[in-house]
Image (tube, rainbow, N blue to C red; front, side, top):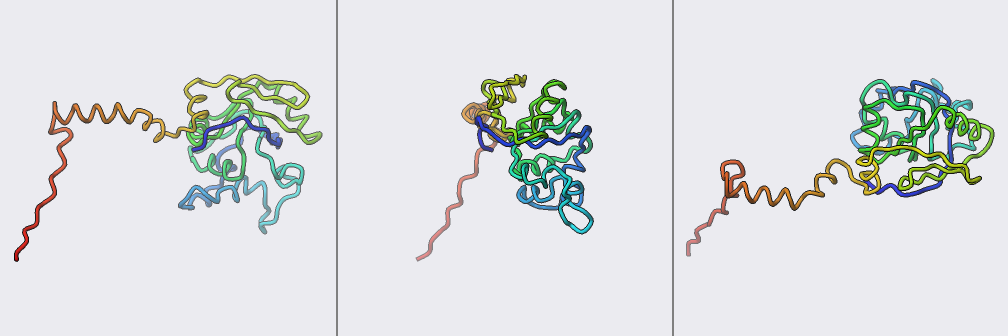
Length: 214
């Protein structure tokens, strides 16, 4: 997982509430064995018709939003099933940040564990961003360290984020990386256990000696 750095990205407005994970990545595409490729199926039922042709009225199919890396939407984004694939699909498509009024709890947890920054803003602030992004091209600068989102005009939106999640994203730590931060302490504990309780962490068997006949 890469550390989250300050970046400026194009905003795509998805003016919908209660966007569930089955719409973010439909269940028939969960069979991929790697995390790559899910972006091709992001919002599949909204992006494509029954023949697989792009729907012209969907926001991500419109030319001015095709390279968007910031998605702004409404309340309860990511509700529904707990599939982690929804986060993978957004990241694989190129979305680095989702800005919304609120998020489903499990989706929120899956997001920060995979490096996707979710930003919660007030409804009136979402209204402003949605309106500006709909009326014309809007770029926002996301600064996680300072906990702010800013427009080129200087208009800023402040957001709150738990320190634990903020630090994980800034350092690029997934669950394994977070554990490895304490690798020395884990090794120290294991060493003590080998002495104090050898039956807990048994010593590694010595390699067998082979006899040679001449």
